Amino acid sequence: MSRVGRCIDNGPMEGFWGILKCEMYYLNRFDTYEELAAAVEQFIHYYNHERRQHKLNCLPPATYRSLLEAA
Figure (cartoon, rainbow, N blue to C red):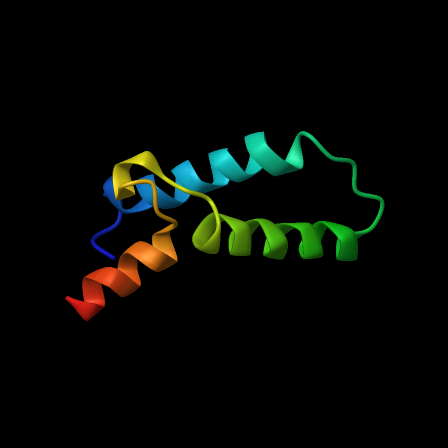
């Protein structure tokens, strides 16, 4: 991280939380904290291992990273 007041470090994380809220949180109702925590963990796994992204040649991020590391 860089110095205080450099909001550019927060950009990727703010984007992720926005996607999480739009695609998972606002579409569901959670009665307990445990349900919410499990849903967040499931979404993070989906986001990294299953969700295909156009900017990564329609591959999930984990697959794309492993291909880059193998090259």
